Length: 495
Ligand SMILES: [Zn+2]
Image (cartoon, rainbow, N blue to C red; front, side, top):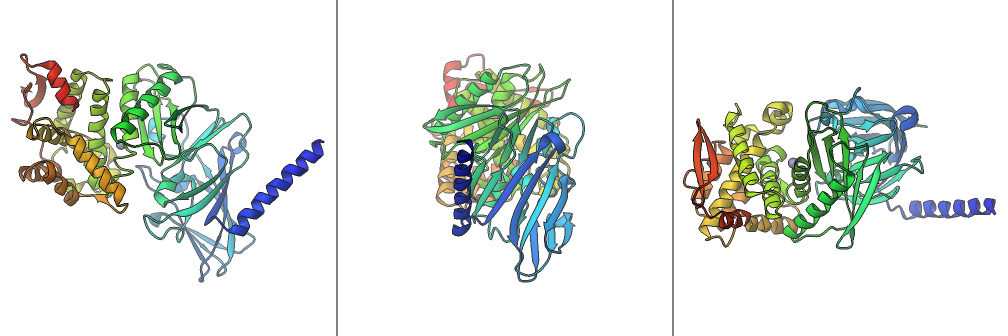
């Protein structure tokens, strides 16, 4: 009986694999085998044809997301059975293979973690491969043949087969938990994904019939899994309602503990149908910090991943600044923070921005090279600048429309535009056009001054009744006036 079962399984398995080859339904198939217990590595194998000149060029980003020298993580790149010359061209994010023309090559390589010692938040985008688990981003896992994608919006059909994951280990990814995955994705969506395996715990809930997964590991010190799981539930539901959106297939969130001891550090990144998150596992990480992080990262589903930037860093005032503003605004709308919390955030941002030595550099200096090359210096600038400017125009639209509209309507307009045209990208011109729909010509001057020129936002006579500005030294500080109708003010701020 036992033998027969094996036999039947073998038949079914062969049947499926023949089928897939016959139909040729994939543009490429990757077989991925983590060997974490033995060699702390992940092996990736695929087959792909050289061009008429015998070349197979593979894209793999050496520097991205603030990380440098990712090529250090590649070990044992091999081409089987054929003679091949392999060249690593770090500066061009390229691995060049030269072999016979039009020949299907069998390629394999291994990815290893390239840092030692404890896991800190600063490592969050690098391959993390320990003895009990791995956490790796698509952009760090896949070498992508140069001709697989012809444009930013073209899609490829990709098969991914995960092997050797233990029965007691959890496997999960931005694309769900199946170990045989069939994707039809853009290069951006393949890159912006996560894959985890090992000693994780998985929880799941349904949002309008679509599964939302939460995976985490370790023993949390300042909260329990359930706290973050509930936070995720609330955030998913509130934000999807706000954007009048739903989940297409599934949504996945990972949370990893990091090992800072005397301070807290949290961070994450919004990906395809998913986001990743990291938090210091110590008493300094509170649920309020996590609520901000989860609101911020989930918002990237719409701001950055649906309404896309024309030139990544140049529009960070929008994709990070407006995202941060809305993270706080939605927390206020959902009664998760008080009016005072909200105003304190504005004041902290004003004060930190005021003290920032580079606070007046023009937006044109926020280039990819400058920003990521001097991350410690530039990091917060577009977040703060965008947040304060978003609050300014939110207030202006409310006053101008006698509190019938707010920045929310402008954001929903933008989303509609991005959904209807997948080549739409946010830039100065598009944003100015929308501004004129809600405000007058002065708004264009403000945009030039505060975003493009980088002058500090002047809130004098810009706030609505009930809020006043005081100066602490030379730093403006917003507060609720003594005679203000706080209830009405709260309603107006939430609008
Ligand atoms: Zn962000």
